[in-house]
Length: 524
Ligand code: BES
Ligand code: ZN
Ligand code: MN
Image: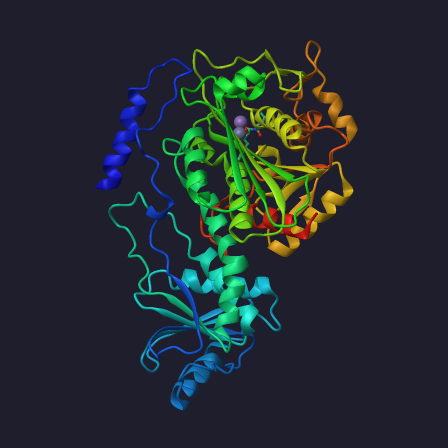
């Protein structure tokens, strides 16, 4: 009911919106708080738990590990062992076995993590359990041979895996999970500290990123994106926020970001969030994300099929802010500035036309030959602004930039383009450690020949089909000083999952939060 009226209000505000481009559509209070998202199980740690509800056992092989604080009688153990043998369950990573009718348990779920599981394998076991027990109407107890740090890893995976986005469902809504999840282990205080100091803030950052990207474009537009991020960071020590509105950007001469947004009644924004932890260096690392809150293509309009997915074209900006949330909330000893280059790309009488030439903040000019190649345009101004105003020691872009990267890497890897070998190596390592993997792509200088313009400094597309993802990267890189270590991540193939995996439910993935969080902590 409430949701319906909110949506209605949003639609009304749209219809009533004045056509003048400089007017900002506010959305009449549709910015629902992050807390409005549907129930998740609270996550806790204990030395023991009652012998009822659902039990998850993290297994490394076919043998039931010691379960410490959980009372499991000989007959229950016997029943589990018989089921394990009958099903040839071997505890391999990713395997599960669901049992009912044992003792007073509503269900016993065995989840394999493989022999000597790494932290990521434990997290995946937790994520798998969360998804299997999505609609279990009981509290959940988790046990297994994972130690204190391992319990925090499992909890982290559970937090990522239990994510759902169903706030707009009013009928046929799956019942929210009932009860908390408790991880049982010998030292719950240490396990809880490990979770709260690192993994919970990170899971919160991933949730924010997924929420921002899953929200439709009538709810998340530049101004409401800013409001959501402010809300997520309210009261967090070490954080300072700067927001440039369209008028400020026009005045500064940020022609490309203003140009991309000028077909939309929703004003563009540049949001910069600095977080400086104790003992961190003077120069920050800049994470600069593409924040196109809807990409219709503009006058170079996209075909209709699948266009809805372009509500997620702000995934780069969302993941940048998710990483900043994680780093700030965990008080990491790092110095970062997260930048969201926010605009809505729409066709309109006032929209920019193919062939238009705009001047960026750097003073360089760009011939805009296809308004659907807009991500590189907003990033050109965003990179220049952060370089001037924050003097970062490195710049990392993250953007749903090209369809070409989807053809090359699909949903397996994000594409990594880098001019700096040390930064490239650090990103690849952070990808492996975080589970958000990258594949290096080429930035050959000959590709750059294709973006020379006859009448401006460069053009935003190549004259004919070519290495599209590399061309896009070159356009962005053209606006970054060669002396600044720079990398660009094309996440167009990984920002939206068409099917669930243990840590990533179906829908927008929040890709990049875990990766950038890791990169910042590793010191790059
Ligand atoms: N946002 C799109 C890229 C995209 C495609 C993201 C598929 C996610 C899934 C981007 O703005 C775009 O439209 N790129 C064009 C560039 C072209 C006009 C040079 C593309 O890839 O087709
Ligand atoms: Zn786009
Ligand atoms: Mn586009």
